[in-house]
Length: 232
Image 1 (spheres, one colour):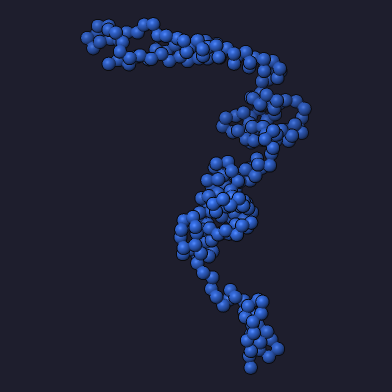
Image 2 (cartoon, one colour):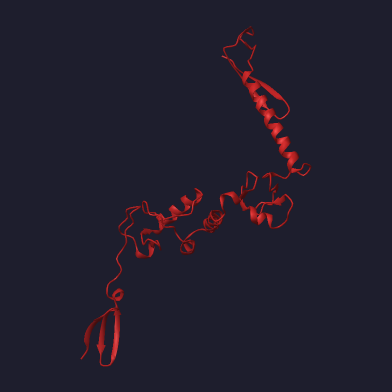
C-alpha cells in the first residue's frame, strides 16, 4: 500500500521500494504578482522581474521604462524601490531590452569605470564620446588623435579640434589673446548706445521712433551693428 511522507523537497509518495517526490510548485500553482510602481496586482508571474541583490519584484514594463529613463539621464540603472541602492545587472536585462539601450548601458558602465581625471571627450559637438587618456596615450606620443567613435581629429593635450599649423604652446597663447579680445569687444558692445533712429509714418513723413533695439553681433575680428526697428 502506498504511504505518504513529507521531506525537505516537499511531499513524497512511497510505493513499495520506489520513492516519487512531488515538489511544492507541482502541488500549488504560482500566484499572480503585484507591482508597487504601477500598482497592478494581477500580473502574470512570467511578466515579473526580481532584482538580484535585494530581491525586490516589479513588472517588466516598469523595469523597462525605469532602465530607459536612467540611461538617458546618463546613469546606471538601479533598483526601483525607494532608497534601495542595488544596481540592476545588464546580463539579466539584455534579453528584454532593445539593442540601442543595451549598447547605451554598456557605454555607461565603461564611462563609470574611467576616473574623472582620466576622461577625455571628443570635441565634436555632435559626438562628445568619452575616452580614457591612458588608452589614448598608449598609441603614440604625439598630440594628434582621432575619436574612437566619429574619427574626428583633435589634440589630446588641448582637448580641442586638431590645430595642425600651431604647436600646443602657440595655440594656447593665441586662444588666450582671442579670449581677451572677446571680453573687450563684449564690454564695448555693452556700452554701445543707439544715437539716432527714425520711423516712417504711413503718410511718408519721418517721425520719432517709438521703439527700437540694437543687436550687436561680435566676431573675432569686428563688430557688426544691426538696427532692428519696430514701426507702429
